[in-house]
Image (cartoon, rainbow, N blue to C red; front, top):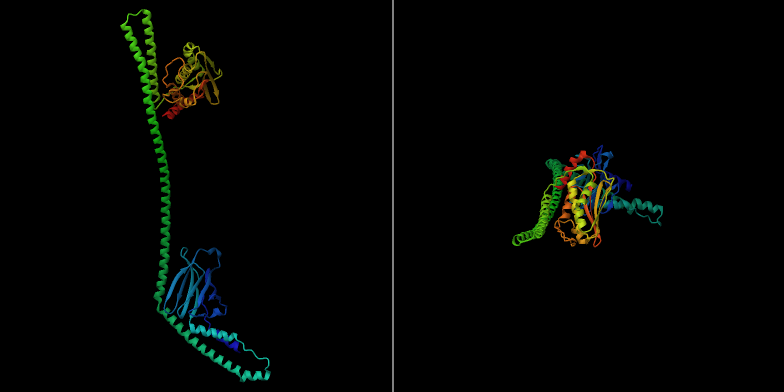
Amino acid sequence: MKKLFITFLLLSLVFNTKFLHSEDREVKLDFIKVNGRELTSEELDFLVFSRNDSISFFFHLETKDTSLRTPFIFRVVIKNSKDSSAYTVNLKNINYKNLPEDFYKLTIQAFDPRNKWVAKPLDIEFIVNNKLSSKIKEIKKLTQTTPKIPTHLNSENIERRVFYGFELKSLLFGFGAAFLVFIIILIIINKSKSKAKRTFAESPSKMTIDKQKYEQIVLENSNLRAEIAALRGQIDALNSRAEELRRQNIELKEKVEKLSNSKEELEELQRQKDELFAVIIHDIKNPAALIKNLVELLRSYDLTATEQQEIIDDILQTSNRIVALSQEVSRILALESSLVSLNLELGNVNEVINEVVKANTRNAQLKNINIYVDIDSKLEEFLFDKYKVYEVLDNLVSNAIKFTQKGGEVRVTSERKDDKVVIQVIDNGLGLSDEDINRAFQRGARLSAKPTGDEPSSGLGLWIVKRLVQAMRGKVWVKSVLGKGSTFAFSLPFIQDESTKLEKVEEYQQENE
């Protein structure tokens, strides 16, 4: 009887939570915790809390179609008879404590501002009332308390005490107290419901304002996203521009370094040029002074014909030295120009070698030096500039004779290696030191070795050789051992197709500009 009555009392106090059903998305309640204890399903039917209770609501978004799952957030609205508040969360639980006594309605709704969908909300109604909460707790205690029957009592006394004794009084007292509590709860609930409904009915403007605020927030959020996208585009453009400026800055630095190096090279060339012309002027001044003295000698003394002839021969020899120096200066000026003209013709380089050797044979005989020619008789004709090859070979052979002791030998060779023709001038003369090898092809370089027959040397021959060989798209090098002789060699490209001669000439000229 007692359990049946309490069950009827609780069922009569139930307020069902209202849910709106949606086909796609719906917010569902998982459980509720009060002061860390999870409420049972029976306790969820009627929610009454005290002000000191710590209340936690746990929920989730239920989606039937898994393809519709997108990022979302929850909007929580809590209202009572006096006030309401709304906020968004990205968690799946909310907590409340120290709520004022009143009737509350909690609405939890999931939405996606980007894709503009709103899920079916979860509505929960509950009461915060200290007295009501206390009474309900007392009723629960009464239902959980079962009076114990002493074992020494017989059945007759038990029936008498049940119907006429203490147990009957306790039952009547409990029934009256429960009925009184029931009446109080009904009055409070009806009053709270009427106030809440009146408040909700009297405040449509607040709800409208909340909706307008929500739409305004969604609009502002969309605008902010658009602004962020635009800013990201600007940032990407700025990064691209910065990268371009960085690349241009690197290129400018490289150009500045090249210009700085070119400036230093030009200054060094100018210095060498000044030194060179100082040397040439000095070399010309001495033979010119000698000619002056010889001419004065002819005018001042009564000389025999033999003596006059000797003086005239000396003047001729000295004049030839001056002419040779002048020719070298002319060649230097020509080679320093921005363009070296080429005259490529099909020819046999062995014929040029024989001509050079023949022209230098007289100077070799004066020093008792033998010149040998070791050329490749099967070497075919190819395109080269005969005059420039002759000048290169003449410089190398005459140098070999100058720096070889009397009784030495000079050998000239030619051979083809792959797509090149290699020509060497080998001697067993004084040789070069390591420092001389490094400076051998510099303009105006005076090497440590001196001509063995007091021949004149301006220090320009090897520089002219290098300049001419490079103009013909070839390479020049030297190998030497001090005191044992030297090998000066150069290579030329082996080109036989005369139809491409003009094209090759243009390539050489472009490379030398």
